[in-house]
Length: 468
Image 1 (tube, one colour):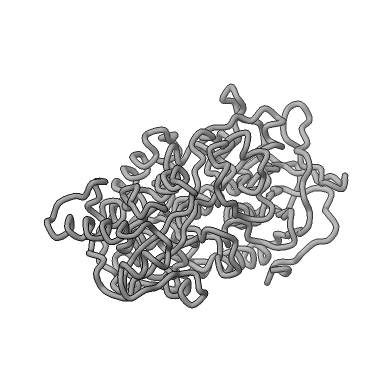
Image 2: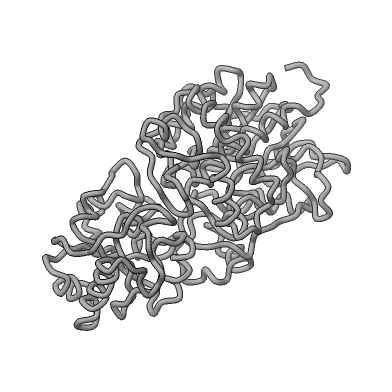
């Protein structure tokens, strides 16, 4: 979008503000509103001409435990189970303090977002969740609501305003210099510029294993904030764990919204060019993405039947199977043999694979890959036996990088020695430490809201000589 409903858009930068926020994804918008609610004059700078970043390209799922929607659907969940899942999915490489911080504040942030008008739909189970806790929301609408509320409190935004450097007086961060040379002074700066999924040089440096992956994300996700903070000595973490996301359409397509689909979590299997399965499809979709990249030719197929198609949900992009069929992104046949021919797999290969999979389900045993559930520990497998049958050509895409700046529980950016860089905060995809070595669905949007709010509130608490 080129306009920001309800929030005044500035064309000339003020000389000085209280809290300066960089990046208009959820983390930045949450930080802006939190700072404004704390009584500070807050300004948000967005590099591009539109708000949203990777937030509006995501599936729009937030991971909350203990929500009203879960209670209405009879879903049993708890903060303790949420924490257990986060730690286990992250292979205990997470910063436990950040995991605890998320768990402590996630429900309050959920209620804060709802108070500002955010609405959540039907809760789904997804990767890494022991209980269904993926809360879908219209992310564009979410950002508009937060920005409108911030604008009513005096906050402002500037579009097409890329920051070039963080200003530092030798003792603390004092503001930013824009790419055109103009400077804006601030009592505190919150960096929420996202990751670097769109920067091939940084990907080659930090994630050479993603060489053959597709690339998506916000247009501005070039790692600008990361580089600006690193220039001041900021530490980084979790870079070895950058992974791609499975389920993206295998080539560029006008109807691919960037999220891909995960039919595997509703009953599909994934097969390679040899017509063979290659992974336990209930695993984290980042791990499935890694396994897919290792297959011959990279492209794989999610194969499913009418039973899984009936579970399509056009309100949740990763489960928008019917929408993909309408867009011509699925292959279809009345028999498995016919689907095998449509894909171009070796004769008999897919028939053998599906027969073996169905036989394991019928016998009640785990299959050769150890699959016993649909997604994580949730959902019972179903045979692939109800025509028509479908195949989605699926690749692995780098949508987000889930690593970055080292932060403490106040969202202060830390240097390589673990000391805060004074007056510099960060939130969202640009930060590391929270996810560790894995990723649970809903925690990218979730942490952007939770940690963005904390960063904005704490940045607003910095001492100021100015009256706002």
